[in-house]
Image 1 (spheres, one colour):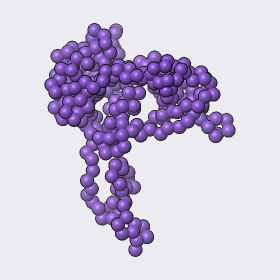
Image 2 (cartoon, helix red, strand yellow):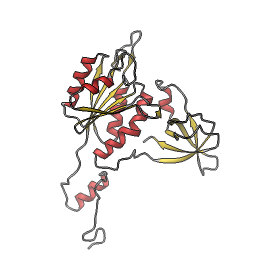
Image 3 (spheres, helix red, strand yellow):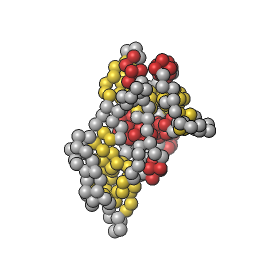
Image 4 (cartoon, helix red, strand yellow):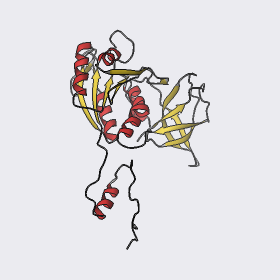
Length: 270
């Protein structure tokens, strides 16, 4: 008696995600019900006249929507429930109706990808400003990629305007969206990503005044005692770098680039 768990022992702590073995332990203790935090619901909208559904044939000037698929998978990876709302054209009234429909689900968060910059057809900021009882908290963050990010709130619902380029949207998700989803899920408000220290294989330029997040591949050093990080360059709208990259190398806001063979922090993708 008491060899496995003694009396009055804390078996599971608040804020701990329940793993398969945790559920088995609860079953072994005769606990068939537990109070948990509900899974946040995240509505996802892609915007742009140029977008078509992934299964459609492309006509001139069109591209397939990959943000809805990518963001939905990132949301599921957090243990949350994604609801994709489809593609919305660059029209103010249409976008407002779509956002209101997403909020009426009800959802705990709305991710609106595309249209967050300051061009003539970038309506996201105006849409979020005009939704009743919504407050825009920030338009623009000092990071690259992902500078034109928008954050707003309506009551207790978070609304994000994400960059249209999927590479930028992924970075913003990991840095800002994922920590909030973890907090809403009852976990620690952090990225939850594994962090390693790696040595750069080449010089990496950066501009003072913003944090840079460089997509990198990771390899063990010859003596297997340390990691080497190699940049994966390419425009944020390209798909090829997304496949190759294994993490994000962080260059601080007050650092003017990194030299070859310099140590840096790398956030590993799950």
